[in-house]
Image (cartoon, rainbow, N blue to C red; front, top):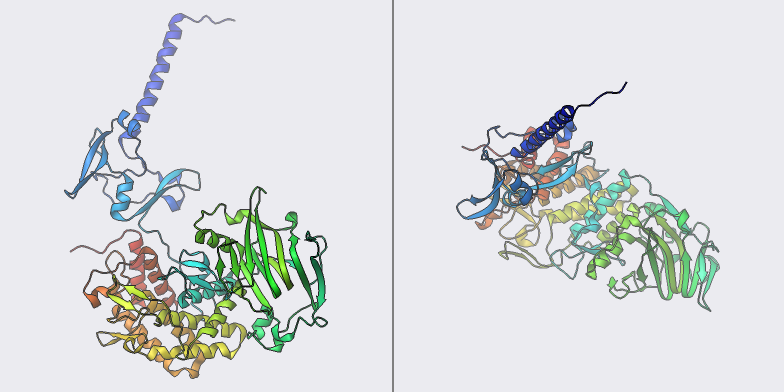
Length: 613
């Protein structure tokens, strides 16, 4: 049966279609008249829209970028917004007098942060935050033998103020206040504490042994005539002696002094590799390797010796080289080359190749060309004469790094038990000056925290004795070269920066209290005074804490009180440091006042403010 379609039917269908399209356009255009709302049912709980604004607020803020042409088409008119009768910014107004202010202006004006993100269900939203930093909530009570605070989240070596990791000492060289670089005790202690904490929380690293004294023919290649590779016995070779051998990490736990103790002689198979010549190459088989960039090896240079590690992109299109040589120059821009010492003794090198590559790029003022996760070691080329053993690639080497930090502390502790800071420190535009050789309570406290942990880790009294010696400066006033002071001649305070007049830096003082607590719990009756220092320090903290509260954030110090100048507002990362410190401290004290303060300070991160009068 055939249906007969009349022309009138066709006209009716066209009219209905046009009406449908018009209605759709009307609905879609109507959406541009009011700010887009986030429907809670479409998002996870994390991203549900919450607001304290009244529904009748007259000037909502447009989150995101304003496209001029599109907004003009849909009833948006460009107008000027006059800010405090001083200057104007370009805004947009709708037909119903709703005003939209660009977020770029709002961000700078109110010091807030925002970016477009994807929710778990792939919806794009604009994420607005008052702070760029976050709080680390304690998972358990603070333990003086275990991880140090939240430092397992820190990666000290990649900080901008770390110039490089010294090949001579294995610890950071800092550019803080000194562009040429110096050994900064606080940074070195934090480097050790972060790696100690990671060694406990991140588990055992992935390890690949490349060479352990057995000659692996498939990996080694000699391209230059006269070059040679041989296996040598530790007993038969006169080049090797017990005095200069170096311990493994396992041996270091038992006997850490690696300079001249015969007990430190370590070589499992009693074999080492002897290399002599040019371009002796160890080529890695990619299919068997991971993208692990932690290289460790034992090497005894016998003549001018260097080796170069080649990092290749996973695509195979790019290759980068980093060199290491037995010189006393920490970094030579020609290469680039890291020095590990001129002495003809066994050196135990542990290098984070990715970090070395990043720092070399920074020093040479070059942009980092590739992400480290996309690189792998392709080959190692040796040049000169040396004995080599235990060449290892691993995913990390946290033990080796915190051992290096502890070794530096032992070697550099002076007769007063301190670690002097050998660069000038200026505060308040030069109004407060510390000349080279000053001591910091924060440096002493964090060094104590690392040394006491090392004591519990290996059971050697040498570390506890060093930590105990560090206590003496807590009883030396700032006027006499120490860092002990008082607020209003009443409340005891330990200065991070012992200026005169005092500056009363909050975070450095609290770090020193953790050091005192760690020593108090570690040395018992050996340290009668540490209990007194810790107790009086806590009393001062509780009495002065409210002075650091601005009603919307915290102050870094009290220099405005000492110098009668404008206050020093704590950056958000310092504000969260204050919060983190109180949270961890309160796992020990269970103090209601500290709990109340930390909750209020957490609220400031979300834009909460103290009440107006």
